[in-house]
Structures are given as structure tokens and as C-alpha cells.
Length: 378
Ligand SMILES: CC(C)(COP(=O)(O)OP(=O)(O)OC[C@H]1O[C@@H](n2cnc3c(N)ncnc32)[C@H](O)[C@@H]1OP(=O)(O)O)[C@@H](O)C(=O)NCCC(=O)NCCS
Image 1 (cartoon, rainbow, N blue to C red):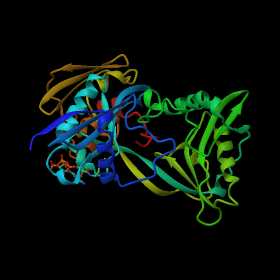
Image 2: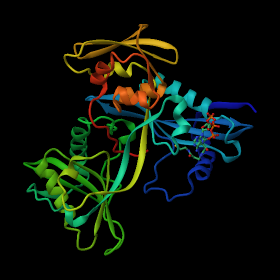
Image 3: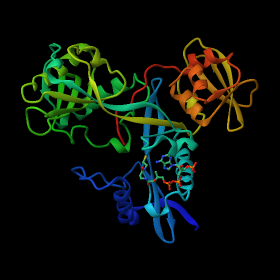
Image 4: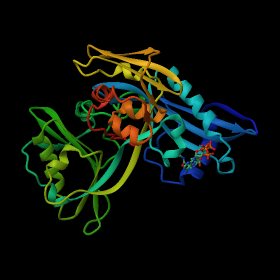
């Protein structure tokens, strides 16, 4: 049965909605509803016998790595209608989506996979996770003297600025810039509290109070960012004041975030964890991320039978064709190398790296940039 692979538009909306109900179950739409079609969203699909049979979405994002924003294709909405599963429809849809994403300049692609094996053939490998952890509300009383107030819509730009300062120092998070983040960041939660010093917003927490009070009640924290420890302490202490009605706070977080070093009464306990995967769409991704100052190296590598060399000097990396005597990487190995998720020795253990180890220290010095995080689900 021949499938037609094509971009999807507004005429496809009803068929897409039916497919998503099949794939992900019905759910209450957010208020206001998130539009399927919007600037920054590119849908691709497969049509079989005139019916939409598969979908995938490319979101126009950028991700922070090494202090720069790397153009990213954020994948979502992957579905194949039940009657056509197992027929190999995903591959041509993904190939078309990836090609179009490269054309618009995406260098990497990321996604939250329901199963890791679905996306391995394109090199997607998990490198961090978006987690929810539960902490006792009373344990968040950790001092701080920065004045707090409830945010309003006029604070949107200042809140974004605090967020940007926080995530630009990390590796992996989305930048929350571009068409898909045009909406004010305060709209979809009960409360955003800002910490303000000398008229400057220096921290914020976005939270939902949740239902009811007493045993079982939970307050959810979606975002917690601050420029300094006093602002961070003040925001946590504000949350602690809910202790008499809400015994637990559930914080959306990633890795061991700095706030966890301030609370001491009880460890945070995991509630859920969504693994986040990356692949390299274009090896020029290595060129946009600064190299460590002082590192000079010539690093040949082969992926899918194609050999290239990273020429590292003066804080920059250039990718040149050809080279000899280098490492063999799987596509997933290339993804994990770009992300800086593992030392070379562990890539070997995972079966992603083979060949000589003389360059291992230089590869590790180039790519291990520190802890990896993600703060947005899509
Ligand atoms: C996941 C889904 C899109 C796969 O559709 P499909 O028709 O089976 O996909 P294809 O036939 O094109 O390719 C399937 C490949 O992925 C693998 N795969 C599919 N579902 C998998 C799963 N749940 N776990 C592991 N591997 C899986 C298959 O083994 C196959 O690999 P192979 O070609 O090496 O054998 C489909 O089952 C679906 O719509 N599920 C519900 C929604 C969902 O989970 N979407 C993914 C969101 S991240």
C-alpha cells in the first residue's frame, strides 16, 4: 500500500484530532486551548488510501549548550493510526520532517519518547530527564530576606529574563524564545511570585495551589529560578508557609537542582521522570558550541561510514571532511557525544563507541560541559 508523505495543514485538523485521541487518549484541553497549527509548528504526515495514517510535529526551538542556543527540532505528536501500526510508516514521515528541519537550520532534534527503541534508528538517545519530586512543605523554610510580591502580566519580560539567565548557564534546556513561546509566561498557573530587589526581579516561582487541603493536598511548582541564593531561599520559604494546609510540594525539576542543596529536613522523593532524548541532525552542531579555551586537538570520527574530523583550536571547533585513525561512533554515540552525556569509556560500555582510545581525554575535554537539564515538556 503506497503512502503519500506530505506536510499537514488546517484541512487535516479533524483527522489529526481523531488520531491523537487514539494515540494518547482523550484529555481536557488546556484553557485557552493550544492550537495545533501555529507559527513554529511544522506537521508531517502519511496518507494511505486518502486517509491520514501517521503524524509527527517539528517544533522550532533552540536549546542551550555551552552558553549558546543551538537550533532544535522538538518532536511531538508522533502517532500512527491503530490499523496501520507496524507497517513502517514512521520512517518516511520522520525522514521528510528531518529534511525540512535541516533546511530551516535545525542542527539537533529532541523528544520525549514513550519507548526508547522507536527513535533509535535516527540516533535519538536519552541524555537527561524532566522530573517531578515531592518535598515536605515545612522543610522549605530556609530563610531569605528578599521582598516578594505576586507577579502580573507586566512582569512577563522580567520573568523571562530571570529564566534566560538561569538556563543559559546550563546544558540542554530550551531557551523559551521564538514563535512557540510568544505567550506571556504567567498565563497558565494560579500564581507567579517574584522576588524583587531595588526594583529588579531577581527570582520567581510559578505554582499551582491544587485542590483541597489537609492530607493528600499538593502544591505544584512548575518553575523555580533565581539569580542568587537569598532570592532562592526567600521563594522556597514563601512556599513553606502553605504547610498548614498543603503537606507536600511537588516540584518540576531536572537533575539535582541547586535548591535541593538548601533543604535539609528530608530528601526530595521522585514522583515521575520523563527521559529526554537528542539526536544530531547536522554535524555543524559541533561548530556552534564554543570549545574550552586552550584545547587544541584533531579528532577524527566515523559515523554511518562517513569520516570527518573535528579541528579544535582557539576556543572553536571546525568540522572537516575525511581523517584517519579515529573512533567509530553509532548515530546514538554521536548524539550522546554532542550532548556531553558520557565519558568516552562509558560510551564504549554502552556499545556506542569503538576504536582507538588515544583521543578519549581530548574528546571528553571538548564535550563534557557539566550537568544536563531540561525544564519544558512537549
Ligand atoms: C509508537 C508508534 C507511533 C509506532 O508506530 P508503528 O507503526 O509501529 O511504527 P513503524 O512500523 O513505522 O516503526 C516501528 C519501529 O519502531 C519500533 N517500535 C514501535 N513501537 C515500539 C514500542 N512501543 N517499543 C519499542 N519499539 C517500538 C518497532 O520495533 C519498529 O522498529 P523496526 O522497524 O526496527 O522493527 C505507534 O505505535 C503509536 O501511535 N503509538 C501510540 C502513540 C505513541 O506512543 N507515540 C509516540 C510518542 S513519543
